[in-house]
Structures are given as C-alpha cells and as structure tokens.
Amino acid sequence: MQASGLHTLAGAENVPLVCSAAKPVVSVGETILVRAYAASKDVSISWSVSTGKIFGNGPSAFWDFHTASLGHHEATATSITRDGKRQSCTMKVLAVPFLTPKGDRVNRRCLLAANGKEKSGYGLYSYILLTRPISKAHIERNEMALRAYWAKMPALSELDRGYDPMSINTAYIFVKRMPQQREVDAQDLVKLYDYDRSLRVIELISDIRREGPLIVASRVPLSTYAGGPLIILYDLSIFPARTIPPYVDEFLDQASQQDFKASDAVSRLSLRLRTVIGVLSEAVPIKGDLNSILSVISKK
Image 1 (spheres, rainbow, N blue to C red):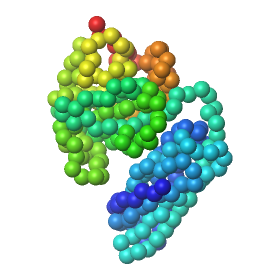
Image 2: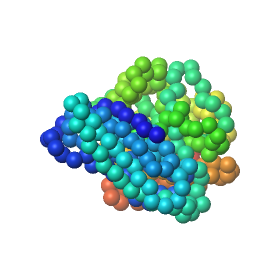
Image 3: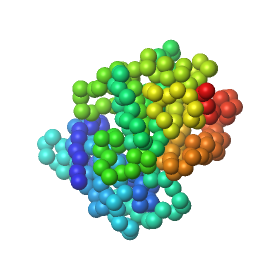
Image 4: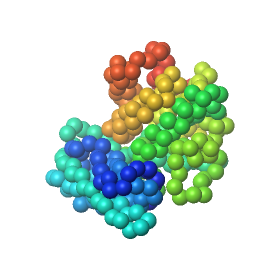
C-alpha cells in the first residue's frame, strides 16, 4: 500500500534521502511513526512496506503492524522531484510477539465539528482542550500540543473495519468546521479550533480555571457526560512549549497499552502517567507539583 504527498524542505542538491523508524523493534499489533528526510524542495514522497499497512503521506507516515508477520521487515520511501529525479531509502524493523500484556495499541485521531457528537462504544475517549491564547507563550503551547497530538496518530477513518471498538482510543479535536483542504497541519487546526466548545467542556469537568493545553481521557463521550465515570485531566499549561511533545507522546503511548475493557483502566493509566511525568521532569525541571499536572476527577 502506498501514499504520496508534497513537502518543501530547503537544502542542497544530491543530498541522499534518509529514513528513520520510531523504534527498531516493534510488537505485532503496534503502529509506529516512520519518517523520510529530503533536502530538495517540492518533493513527492511515497511509501511501501513489506508487511502490515502504511497510512499517511509526505515525509511522515504510520506503519501499522496489526496484520504483520513475525521477523524482519522493510519500509521504503521513494522521493520524486518535479523534474523527475528519484531517490529511495529503506529502513528495517523487527516484529516480535507482545513482550508484555498490552491493550490493542490503537490510537486514532478524529476532528469533531460544531454540534457533532462522538460515536458511542469506544474503549477510551481522549480530547485536547485549548483556551483562547492570551500571550505568545500560550500560542506556542497550543500549537506545539496540537502538532504533537495530530502527528502521533493516523485518522480514525483510516482504521480497517473489523477492529473491536473497545480496543480504540479515539482522540478528538474540536473544530468550528471541517477543513476544506486535504492536507491539514497544526497551524490550520489552531485557526479552525473551537475554543468555545473546549471551554464548555473544561468548565463541565473542572472547578478550577485552567489555561491549557489540557488532555482529557474518559471512558464515556464528554459531549454527553453527566458525571460518574472517572476522568483523567492532564494539564500541560506549566510546561514550556518546546517540552510539550514528549508529554503528549507518553500520554498516547501509555493509553495505547491499556486494556480498555478492564474496569480499572483509567486508574491504571493515571498511575502509569504519574511515573512517566516524574521521570521526564528529572530531565526538564517543572514548576508546580504532580497533582497540579495530573488529576483524576469524578463529577457527581
């Protein structure tokens, strides 16, 4: 399966195309990010893989190992310039059985337009909640969080039929309207983002005024939330923009390892995140205590 797209990276001619995978060893059932780095401008990049499926286009794509066989496998990126010059690069990864008991490792993003409702029946509902920026630093945090959230996952619409909905973490982004263009980036999403709807959800689940960005996870859709089930509230507002991506990455990585059918899935996810935040904060010291970053809420 192949995907192609355009990207523009300035650079010298005759620089080789370079590929990388998010990890060299993957468990069957995982989805990993693969990247191709080209120096030429206006390069079309297509992807092919020896097992599983590839989603996405341009310099980044997602390699889905849910149908992969065990062993060594290759992903190849091929670039073509406007004048027909072609380059390719190949990376290898090793697919192994699950190393530890995990959930089905399926994170999928979805835009939710005004008045739209989430589909019921998914294992976990995640949301990135932003407030209207009031400073340059706030703008940078919003854009960085959206970029990390958006780039980490393929779209829900690209998921094959036959998956158990309870194995899926559906990651929602509120927008005022659906984008007209096919290719969307973080800056486009900032312009389309529905801050009013986000604020209503924040006020619904939290008694504290929060600037955000926030990531919220719930076992039930928040559009119809009326209290009861536990909600994880992950507040990224105290982090400098440049340090936000690893915190977003770890949330999604940990969420993808949960068995959403278990009654204590949200509590276990919270405990995992507390450990991860503690480790990450050793590398980049943070202001504030852990409870101000991560909390578990149950509204009555």
